[in-house]
Length: 360
Image (cartoon, rainbow, N blue to C red; front, side):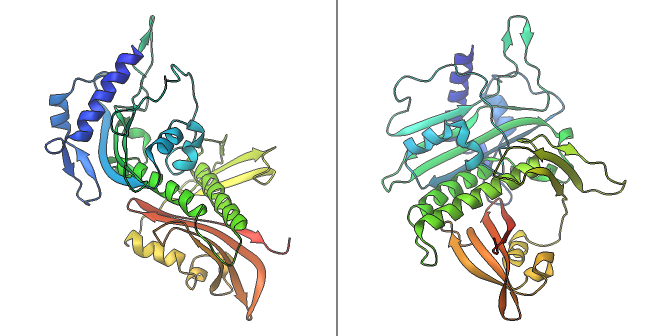
């Protein structure tokens, strides 16, 4: 049964990947493609059952290139332990329940092309039992990877999911519906950033720091951003909600760290708040990353403009970087340093920072 489900999902993914109109239409923002659900319903038989009436559908497609050969990409995508590093803003936690087959030799298509397909198995019956659909399910999704002559890989990524929108906060519903939250372009952009980061870490030279220090800073920035994302989604850690006064829309949580040396030992607090601003994301990101404007929003930078001690560009996009900042106090540098990781792509931007005490 699982083999049939896989083969049916593979055939559907291939057909969707190779089709254009009327299956796919350009999104209103021009950043990707959206599946024509009426055309899909006429052309495919549901392989995991009829969609629940209260579920919402999100289906998108994206094309792109990644700085790596197809075999390297496939090996990393098939290694679930690396998913959180490749998709830190999408995946919070990964568990492997069972390995049905490890494969025989190299399971790839012709002409250096690999196909990876994912599909939910919630509706598969085993004896008298049936898995229950609760919040979401994944229809045939995945990617087609093909080698290019320049060492890069061409990728077609498709995401097709159905979910119960009642579990999505009303502020995020428009983002999820259009695919900006978990759509194909989001997965593609995250994958591109990760492989560009790996390429830069092995080739870029900053004369203010040796290669080992540069690599260590890159790994530290990756770890910091991963912890930041884990703190927001609360999937990979056992967080406990803290009750706050009525009328407060912030989300407060706490957890205890007993043995992880990568974090402070003891109680860890997390506070999150979502707001909407009448300004383009690009302008807001430029405001936050402008070291001369930092004192207007960061209470830790009240002393004035910041100075870049170390600045490492993580890829072709200049907005994606790792920085070590310090504050000016009476023309002298104080002991407080700010370690910062930033990135930006078509689906959004991210700024994560932490305080470093240079006196220790």
